[in-house]
Structures are given as structure tokens and as C-alpha cells.
Image (cartoon, rainbow, N blue to C red; front, top):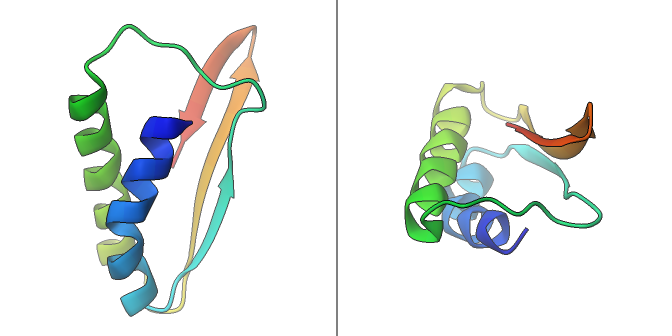
Length: 76
């Protein structure tokens, strides 16, 4: 959740500039992954920026974290 929060802070200016509604649902208990946190944040920022870029102005961007079949799943 911390990495996602940082990515959202970084991408928020672009999202707000395009007038998008941002719907974020974090995992209740977080997600643990054996990854480089800096690189994962870069990936999330790129996905969020692309979502902002290719979503029509005033559109909706959803970020959801949930468990599917016991494994964490993040969808942007």
C-alpha cells in the first residue's frame, strides 16, 4: 500500500489536470512482494500516467487491490 500511495502522489497532478475521478481501494492487509520498491513504484506511476493520458477528460480511473484465489491482485 505504501508503494501505491507514493505512486498516486506522483501521478495525482496529471490525473487532476485532466479532471479525472480517481477511485482507489487498497488491500485491507496490504500486499507483500519480493520486488524492488523503487522500480515497482515507477511501474505504477507509468500505468497511472498512461491511464490519465488515454482516459477522456473528466473520466474515471480506478485502482483496486483485492485477493483472488488467496493471492493479491492489483488492477489499474
